[in-house]
Image (tube, rainbow, N blue to C red; front, side):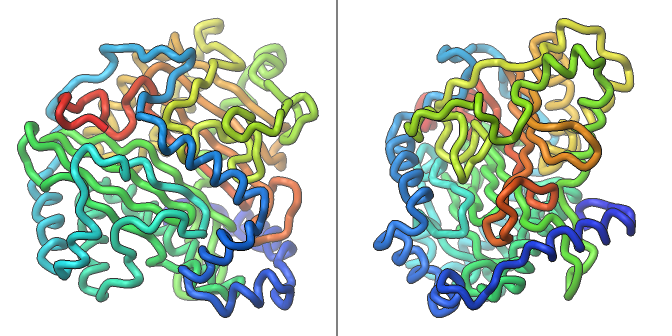
Length: 432
């Protein structure tokens, strides 16, 4: 179990999401039930269904074709924020696991899975269950020993608790597939895996891997004993498993609870400043129809830093932490929250990242959308020159809640100023 929740909270979440199950006899589900993952994707492309997502994918294509620059607050990359360092990562084990994958892949699979260190495909990840880009090898299509080897590399790269979080996301995706009777579209192995560069323990030969699929996208870059795990996307609909093999699995509750505690700890004036919109789809949240620039769309909803937003300018909003003396409790809440978002990082790397975030607290902003009562759905963002953390409660996709609910959660980690994909640490010859 990635999260621990009380029996009462677990039962309440189960009751809440089960009240929003779709009628599976409708054409949306009966049609999809007869398709494999490729037919499902082709049907989406050929029929532009749903149209709102098809239109967004066209915008994503334009963004994907842009040269990589990096996320900023004002359009200008701030230099000198990140440096090469020994983080004590056991890269030798990760290298060994990656080599074991290559040994198990057929020549054709190896060709499909392997990319240059500066390949554009680093940026090809996206969250929808629709396979928009057919890169790498798909875990459900390789023999079980090969899939297990890929999981072994993921385990060797992440912290133990981070690996359990990734497994929880994959298992919840599997549970959702069973729940809506589309296991061929959503299951524990419906993820694509790509390997970049040649696995090496040497800092002069960086390498990495990408895993992407519904509700889990991890970009992992190694430079010797140093690791960058950014960007990441972790989501869940629902955010618990209440029956079956993995019953009791819960995810992304801690991030929500800690964010809410922090917001509730502020004075009313500070809350008013942090709350940039009162409603989750606020009429003041102006949209123009330009999906490249609008701050809300049906897929990303309130997220600004999701798939293909690698170069977005995201101005600071809400409450500047420099404007108030943070109490020790508030500082602890903020750093505990950041630690949950960064759980994938090995412990030493995570500690160093948290120290870096703490060093920039006087340049950190906290913003909030929605209510902040105990039962309210909400969005928040923590943003500084060295990190962006986004948390959002979403409306239903495979559940039928039109308004955001606390049982559908999306989270994003970004490293601005060219920190994503380890770009700031790359030598010129290894740049994206």
